[in-house]
Amino acid sequence: MKIRTLIVGAAACAMILPLAAAKAGSLENLERERAMLMQAMLSADLSPKERQSKVTLSRNRLIDLERMVLRDKKLVGHNTPAVRAAFENYDLTFLVHASVERDRALLDHWMRQVGVSTESLMNARIGRR
Amino acid sequence: MERLPILSPSKAALCALAAAWGLGLAGPALAATEAGPDWAPASSERLIKLPGSYLKKAVERDFAKSGLAQALQEAETAMRLKHQSLQDIQEAMERADGQVRVDLRHRFLAEKRAYLDLVTRQQQLRRKQALTKIKLYERLMRKLGFKRGAMTPQKVALVERQQAALRRLNASSMRVDTKLFRSSMGKESKYAVAYAANLAAIERLNAAITAHPMNDEANGEMAGMSKEDHLRGLVAAAEAELANLDQEAGILGLMAKLVSLDALALSDDVAGGTADGDEDGAPNQGLTKAVDLFVTR
Image (tube, rainbow over all chains, first blue to last red; front, side, top):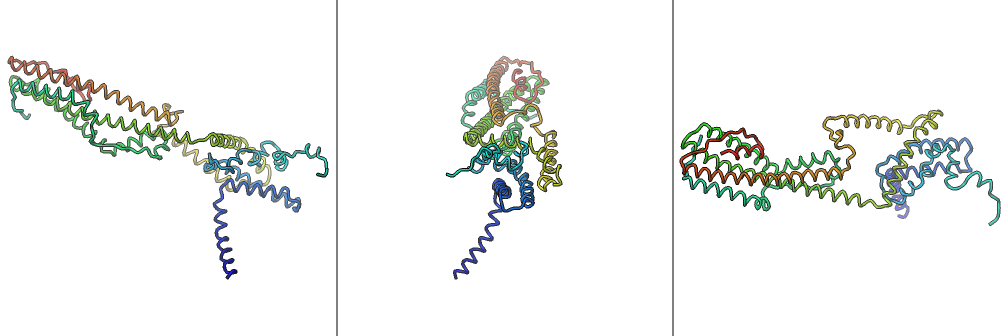
C-alpha cells in the first residue's frame, strides 16, 4: 500500500514539476542560468575544455535571457523582493552585458562585483582563525 | 397655407404675452429639474487606458447610442423645421395684405413662441450633455490621480531603475553582439533573430499608424500632452459649452421679450386698423441666425 502511494505521489510530482518550470518567469530563468554559469566557472571538477564549452553555452543563453528580462513588460513596477534585488545591481544581474560593457572577462567582472579583485587576492595572507 | 382662426387683437396680444412671460420664467426652472432622456456613461478602466485622442471619440460614440443623443437630434430636427416654417410665414407676410397679413402676423408670433419652446428644450438637453461630460471627465481624472497615487516611492524607484537598466542594455547590446557573435564562430540565437524581425514589423506598423490621416496623435496639438492635460482640455471644452449655453439662454430671454413686444404691437396695429410692413431678412439656421426672425415683425 505504502509503495503504491509513493508511486502515485511520484507520478503526480513528475506531472506537476514540468508545469511549474514552464510557469517560471523570465527573471527566474535568468537566475537559474546564471547560477549554472557560475557553477561551471567555479567548479574544480571540470576540465578546461568542458568548462569552456559550458561557459560558452550558458553565456549565449544568458545574452537572450538578460534581454528578455529587461524587455519583459510584466516586470515593470512589479514590486517584489526578487525583482527589486535584481534591478538594484545591474552589473551582477545582467552579468554578460555588463562584463562586455566594462570590457572585462566574465569571471573577473563577477569577482569584482562580489568584492574580490586581483589586488585583494595578492594582498591576502594565509592564516588561521 | 393653413389659416388660423382669427382671435380678437387683445386676445392675441394677451396670449403672446403670456407665452413670452411663461418662457422667460419657466426656462431656468425647467433646466434645473429636467429628467427626461438620459446618458449615463461609466468611467470604466477601458476609458482610462485609452490614449487621450481616442478617449473623446469613445465618449462621443457612447453618447451617440444614448437616449439623450436621440432626444437632442430630434429637438434639433424640430428646430430646423420650425425655423423653415418661420421663414415661409415671413415670406408670405411680405406678399400678403389686409386681414390675411394680420392673420399671418398672428401665426408668425405663435410659431416664434413654439420655436422658443424648442430652443429651450434643446438647450436643456445640451446642458445635460455638457454636465454629464464634465462629471465623467472629472471622475476619470480622479481615477487617474488615484492610480498615480498608488505608486509608492519604492515602486517609483524600481521603475526608474528598470528604465535605466533598459537604456544601459540598449546602449551595450550592439557591442555584445559584435564581440560575442560576429567575432567568433557563434551565430545569433533564434530569439534574437525573431526579436529583430518582430521589432522591424512593429516599427513599420508604428510608422503607418503615425502617418495615418485618422490618427489624432499625429497632429501637433496633441503632441506632448499627458492624459491629465488632455482630460483637463476636455473638461474646459465642456465648461465652454456651458458658458455658451448661458449666453444663449440670455438670447432666448431677449427673443421672448421681443415676442411679447410684437404681440403688443400687433394688438395696437389691429386696434388702430393699420399693419406694420417691414418684414425683410434672410434667416439662417442656429440661434443667432434666428435673431433676424425676431427683430422683424
